[in-house]
Length: 331
Image 1 (tube, rainbow, N blue to C red):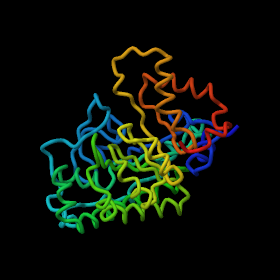
Image 2: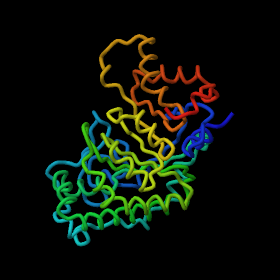
Image 3: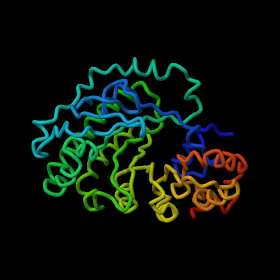
């Protein structure tokens, strides 16, 4: 029997896995407090807390969301994207002791042995732009000053690559999940043409670096971004995570499942507050999840804990899912 890590790596490498993964239990992820992109080191929530990050942006931690958002009234730290070189000071990454960080994070091998090992890194290029400038101003800058934005995005990626050089010297990673949200509930904030023009050169550099290191590149990008998938593939993204159900998962897997893996954060808000029977939950999961798992290009990440136990039980009942020929073909 394959370990959880071996099983997931087969899926990420576009091979038929042995079984459907249980993502939450099959991975071990780290978000070291040394990476201060969202609030101060040692913050209350994942990725930071209330206070200044290492660029000078101020963040506020929310107990409701268990996350941080830029604090109103504290910005912007970037007033003109054409002057980013003068206005933005990048952190001195040479001061971080990654060996000590790994000695802390990797102290208990039982936490990660046999699991896929992942580093989560927040605040991608577009997120950094609208954090530093303000959301509306950042998006306007992509239209009014595309060349300056493109240069800024590449500078952000260069610093992240420098950071990963230090991380990968000590952390035995299989995958890096880099965040950069591009969409809302109805569409993406940027067009496919804009993605190709402004962001693709930076992402291609990032993807080339990770490929050289033998690490999988997973882009975490919330919103209805299905129209950007061709650009993701061209940029070297190997897996798209947090692709909510507002995107047509079955259509994406059918068309692109041989080129990119979907790792969706699955929630069913339409059933919030409803008392569903186990039979109803199973029918929903069969229709919405298991039918798309065919072919192995869909790695479900069950975020909806009203369905989580049922999902785990259904996976346990189907250890031979991929032994059936009809389940080895993309839907």
